[in-house]
Image (cartoon, rainbow, N blue to C red; front, top):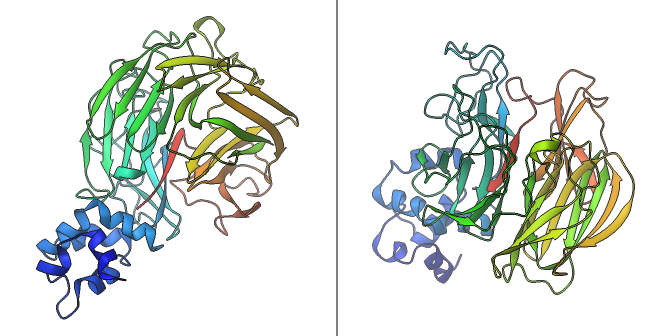
Length: 428
């Protein structure tokens, strides 16, 4: 590792700090980036220089550059009673004594937690949360550039009413997955809304429903660095139970899977970062609950306006939630979906700026319940009660180089086997 590259991590460390006695700082940094993520919080207690280095955002970037970053899949999921004790990320629950939850709650009301699967270390953990339980049906979104996981909206666990709350978990810098903070609240309480990270520091939300189950047209954008929300122009239609995703300018090719994944690639010549949009997929209106729309709407940050895109979800009896996930990385974009039909078609929005080519292909697994998502830019499927799991539990499958494989030899551990409501993946 050259001194110049070490300088990119932290310019002054090799000049004024002794990170490891007897070693040049550039070599010491080479050692420290290789320490597993679960020990980073403890490492900050070693010395001031270590704390400063590990709290610097460039440290996480260097871990990823040299291939030492760990990939986390964060899942908002109902807790399986008896509820395992909450711990910080990196402190495994496996093999520990399970404790009963004695807090009063409405009979039959589920409790939700934030579970973390470390795909690099093959471990499952649960993140401790102030107040013991996170909002029901909250949206989980990752902001890779700043190393944050956000939990947005959902229902209050006691009143079962939609909330405006935003909780931020710092996975990089000072936090290391052990500290939550309350972010600025949304302007409007909502749940079951579209949500997606667009670019390096903006999170867009739209639609969902209010405390009277009215489908919402309103939309907002959250600036992660400034910790502030701004209202956007409303959509043309109210959309409850809609799905959000980031879109690249011009052609994106989508491939819907039969009961399974959909992948998408942007056309040649596209450069991510020049222009991205926010797509709100399907949903239904207040008077047509459960009947999903075939169209969607795309927000263009440049023109500050919405445009309708037709025939993007021609499955009126199926919710796009848990069936569509998206990820934009480098010069390509991928999307996945779970549908039981085989067809091909293409569509574009009314401005002819955003275009989608769609094709269905077959899923490798069937089950009584399926949830599809994205793990580091690859399709991931959680399935319960299917032939692959023998009806015993939930399994996870991951698509790598066009092939599907089981993530574990056995089903997901007890306490982490319920299908999630929302998810996000992030490198740390």
